[in-house]
Image (cartoon, rainbow over all chains, first blue to last red; front, side, top):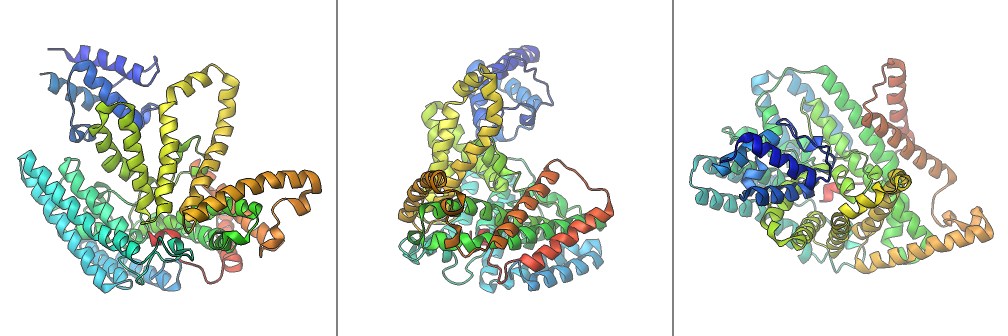
Amino acid sequence: MQTEQTIREQLNQVFREVFDDDSIEISDEMTAADVEEWDSLNHINLIVAVERTFGIRFSTKEVNGLANVGEFIALISSKLR
Amino acid sequence: MLFNSLDFAAFLALVACGYHLCPIRWRRWYLLASSYLFYFTWSVGFASLLLAVTGVAFVLAKRIADRQDERVRRQLLAVAVVVLLLPLLALKYLGQLSFGLIQNPHGGAWVSFLPSGVAAVGISYYTFKLISYVVDVYWQRIEPCHEFGSVAIFAAFFPQILSGPIQRAGDFLGQIQNLEATRPELIASGLRLMLFGFFKKLVVADRLGVVVDPVFTHPHQWSGSVLALGSYLFAIQLYADFSGITDIAIGAGRVLGFHSPPNFDSPFYAENIQDFWRRWHMSLTSWLTDYVFMPLRMASRDWGQLGLVASLVINMVAVGVWHGAAWTFVAFGLIHASYMAVLSLTLRRRKRFLQQRPVLQRMHRFIGPLITFNLVVVSLIFFRAADLSDAWYILSHACEGMLGSVARVAHRGVEHGVWGLSHLRWSPGDVVVVFGAALIMEAVHLLQRLKVAVDLPLVRWAGYFALGFAILLWGESGSKQFIYVRF
């Protein structure tokens, strides 16, 4: 089982690749408003990249319920348990 | 009852006075009664439909929340969405088709949106509001509301019923369940916004309509350069008209103490088409993004770029046909889908290309909005034209006309060459008034966007009086229906 720290590091790398920006540092409070190119089109690219990286699958309901990156990390952790 | 009528001004004044005099615990019932009274002025019969679909949404949302079994919850959601959509499809789309909208040779798409009189006015808006309520309960974004009256006010709230904005249930129900004491500063800001909305509608939109309407109604009578002018002016007319009624709606909401979501954010300064849709009719765009595009993209995420393009096409055609059952609206949606698809598929390459060329990147900030505005104008020709053949005629002749005008200006000078304005019934005074008013509109939008508050009361009041006098002096007499009320 992966620790939250390793999930966070891997997720940070996914963010950098999807948004093509090596300066991104994710935080729990981070939302789409904090990343310039995080719109509805890139949101799905992010979801797909996370699914591939962690070998998990999200439902529309789960994705729509996310309020910030902290909740995203919690969701990934719950799927990996 | 139209927003741009004295009846509405009197109605709002009476309702607002009564509302603020009413004890807080009775206010929601008073507001419900007022909203239905407003709807009765359009149609008593269709008010019962509004009540019925509200009841369906209320009951099924509660059932969805009560059940644990995901399969049953999903079935209830499907039933709710179908039942809520059926009246909209039957009354808006089948009705329009059977009344010959597409075949109407006299600009039917534009003038006969309400073929049987007033029809189920506001149905596009309240249906979408109620669907969002049920889906948000299903997604557990919000708790179901246990008071039918609150959901009924949400659906029927009279400032928003004619043309939105399409407010989300969580946002509105939170306000209705926590009604606050009267806030004079909110009432004042609402009245200011309404004044600005009337200015946009009566002085900018309706005055532009004098030129735009004949151009689009009988395009074959006009030269290419006039068709081009009419196309550009329609974009400004539609913006002034729709953002005008939105300001009146949001302002009227504020007069009653309610906050509504924004619908516009300087859309003609958008750097690209994606940015444009984040700034134009924002409440509809975000609704479709959440409830159509995102579920489609999630379902099609394993199909690669094909899934992206398919989702974009369905979503943008939905944006188009939301306005009505006409091929022109389908074309409008497809044009925007193609813009969006090209942008999305080339995003990385464009970004890298510009990063390597800093001069071009700086220029892009100015050129981007210019290109975007022109692309929007092209799409709006299809939005406004009576049918596809008219749209194509206007587009092709407008392009020829513009190129021809450039040649004529070079050859004969500006006076005779540019637009042939003398063909239009527009005096130089009209031109000054309407463009002056449009510039004032944009200056105020800029102040709003930059959140600049004018602290000097003298200057502020001079501004209000100037807007008021402008409406009295230059407001188009016999003001027309707001364009978006037809949808």
